[in-house]
Image (cartoon, rainbow, N blue to C red; front, side, top):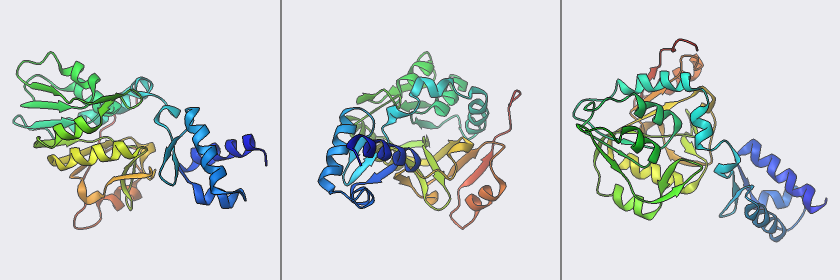
Length: 259
């Protein structure tokens, strides 16, 4: 097999699975792990994947970037945002993670609806920056344009000094058995720190993310207090999410007009 053909096959597998392991690829293509590592290095340099220890994962930029996600299905995301907003108490300090659904939530909030909003998303800070009764705090860090967030060591240091009442966390995938996951390891570490910094955690999830297992785990279901789903979420999956003594509060968003 030619190197170019092998690399195309690797990208196909990555698109289907979200992650590939170098040792498995070497066995599959009957070649050495050194050869596979060179393939992954060259594909990473070409911006087609992100190398991680032992293999590679999808690069965030391979899918729609943040601006494209914001423009996709705004009516569905507004319905989720409306249901999520019902969880907020007037005295709450909110920690709002980056994400197109969380941005829809921020755009619904009124000045004074919470005591403070802390976010790692510049778009959310801008959407709420005119508030005078609600304090808005933007976390520092390195901008990751594809996720619409800031992250890195400075972001983690800032989160270590925060204790929020309610965190709205973003997700790339949610599976009843696996839990909440994301496509990048650095993003997983950031979200884990946000959950740790909060008394309660909520996650609003569009239906296509259900049962999608992203490669880097953020939390088990027991680590989430509230999950907000769309009205078309499969009934059997909702039942599985609600099963068990430590199951989160699962809420179904009412569909907005036009859905």
